[in-house]
Length: 478
Image 1 (cartoon, rainbow, N blue to C red):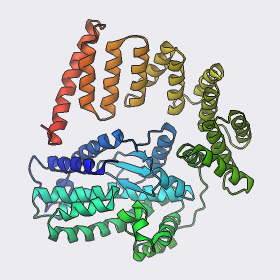
Image 2: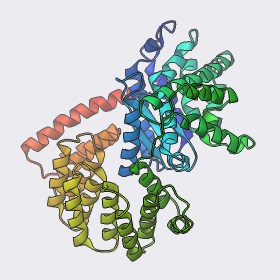
Image 3: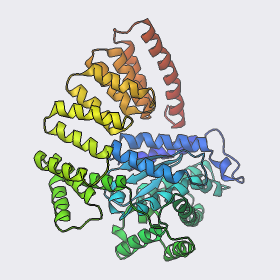
Image 4: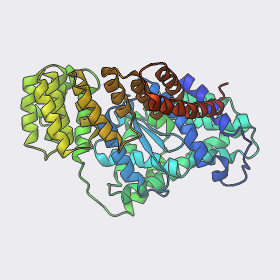
């Protein structure tokens, strides 16, 4: 990710959050940075993240991490706080909370966690950072600071979530006296996030022992090699006292044995199969099966089938899927892979039939909807694709992927105004209002819309121009 460009954006965004006048920093954190300001700041950051190639926009993996995150957030101290969990394709062990309830998770963290409770423990810790409003409280600590210091301190914490060196550089740009105060305060934040995170983990029904076990394992693995420590340890420093405190708290909690969900097992296998070299993935899964080095045979066979599909070993992939079906109950993840295998093998008619049947059982499973619509478009059936997409848009108006598919459908039908209007709506939901304005301007010049369609586009363009101007002012862009 282009971190330095992101930091420049963060600095302008934080400054914009206070442009209307500094709050009374002697009051509680709520008055230092309001939830609305936090959300806007988070949305500005997310626009940059979504545009970066490391943003991992896989429907199945994203739906899984959000399902897990929502389960945890539903029992958090602030039930009113909205959350959005997203993935970064990066092998490093890391997760980070942004303002406004956005929580990023590296794919490397999912692959490193030995069980679902370990993954949940990291998410619970990040959720606690959000619900306890640590960024706002951080700003509130600096009661006598100037605007630039406030912005710099908030920026430093955000930057450190991505890169510890950049975070340190941002700290160095602030007043020296404020720095030590903030460093101490972040240690308090970590301890509080540990405590609240354990409570969330317990109430959500996970094994609370997973938190100290996971953190202690990371600390032992990297304590000698500080410079090569994963990003999570650099941005969430683990002192022995923190781990000891976690262990003491866990001892007072009732023991609960928790089994991993099938979804966790399959998504981990999918990530290993689809991220990186496919032949190496085939070798990994074959060795795991041969030597019985696994906790879930179903996950290993799923991963092998997915890897073989990537290497065009279609016949073997079919055999692995057949073996997999004997091990797991009906699963939309398995049905999606089965259809993808048929598409890859050139069995188009069979694949389309498979998608239709699977969607009868799992009508709201995003990966099936996206793949089926794409397959229809690739096979010159835009009318059917459009019906499928518009049916789902009635219940998922915030889904940018559906609008992108709608735009492709209209393009195939040579309906230019509607194509660019749909593209604009996709951009809005991706946080890129400027691009949406451009698409609506193109739509007005398409020459194929009727009076009502043109009127609708003009009204929407007027609305988005206002929003675009507001966002530019907030970001300090003139």
